[in-house]
Length: 152
Image 1 (tube, helix red, strand yellow):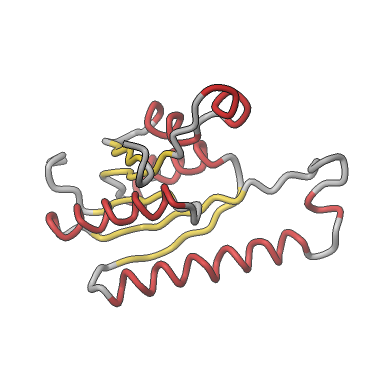
Image 2 (cartoon, one colour):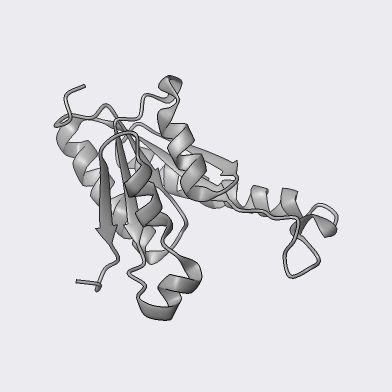
């Protein structure tokens, strides 16, 4: 693969400000290279959320998944309206692992991963970790880390 010209760019989407910055960067790169975009949102639905569990409530997982798909489709439609070849995928699992697995699958033909970072430091970083960091560290292809607007 020619690393300077990806054909398919995976954009990790969590609907946050850093996600918006990453999506903007991915669109700019796709404009330059002619690549298509694949927006991937990973739901981390657990069966042990505060002792009750996401699945303890009837249809909660289905409602959360449907809401994520709807929100992702808005982003996909906007990218398509801007002239980009784009698709959206919603998965369930541990975000960095699912994104890595998706990128590893040759069927998906992912050449570049773009992910935004929240720029957490100190206790917040220890408490929440960095999904973006784990994605970049374990990426099977080149990865681009984009800081949130205003993070420097």
